Every structure is written in structure tokens, then in C-alpha cells.
Image 1 (tube, rainbow, N blue to C red):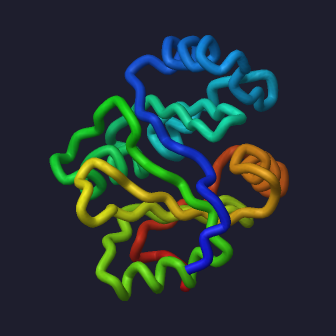
Image 2 (image 1 turned 90 degrees about the vertical axis):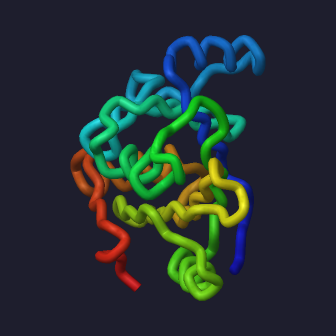
Image 3 (image 1 turned 180 degrees about the vertical axis):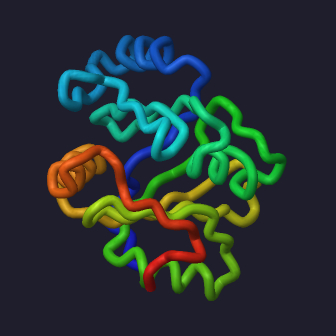
Length: 172
């Protein structure tokens, strides 16, 4: 597997505005602005809102536990006790080839719990064997960052909605 870098860290929070304020005080820098908004609403697509910091932090507040990614990653199949907790939840690694990386992890017995494609951006979440409350996200995209790749995918698609697929529908 070719990991290019640790891309970002998902931190689950109960109050995204309070968490953003605390991280801005700590770092002395602002969260990324997308189209005039610092917090992106992914409730319809993923059941959460998120904010991205240039230092590689992604704050996530679950808004709808029944939605695709929130239910998979934040419960029902993601974390063993089917709950999400505040704190570091997921490490995201940028990989050269998501398909090759997933094949290697599947062969080693790792459980894939979520897969999505938005334009040319693809990501998958897997359970990390040995640490029950830690998930690993593998992501493949063009551009300098996930926010940049998401914006590009949305522009190309002409909307803010991605092409979400379940693990069983994943293209090889």
C-alpha cells in the first residue's frame, strides 16, 4: 500500500461552534471558508456538519444518526459499541490507489465499514484492528486538500451531492 501522507484527523464534537472557537484560540488561525461558510452541512449526504482547519483537523458534529456515514462510522458497524464519542475518532491517510489499498487491507482481514465517491474523490473507512474506538479513512483525490477536491467534484457535478455507494456496491 502506498500511503502518501497523514491527510487529516477527524475529531467528533458535540458543539462544533465551541470546538472551532477553542481550536482557533489554540492555533491562532481560522477554519477554512467554503463559499462564505466555515461549517459545511453534510446532513443529507453524511448525517453531519463539518469544519476543516488548514492544519489537518476535521471537526465533525453528527446531526442525523440515521444517515449513511453517521450511522456507519458513528455507530451501527463502525464503532463496536454502536455509539460515537467526542474526541479523536478517525485518522485519514491519503493513498495513491484506494482500490489497491482496500484490496490489501481486505486480504489482511480488515473490515471496510464505509465507501463513497464524489467526482474523482474516493474514500473508505475501515475498522482498525486492536483499537476499538479508532477508525482509519483512506482517501484518494486530485488537488492539494480534501476541501479543494470536494469543491472541484461539486463544481464538476453541478451540485453539492456526491455519489455514495455502500461497501457492497464499491467499484473495484
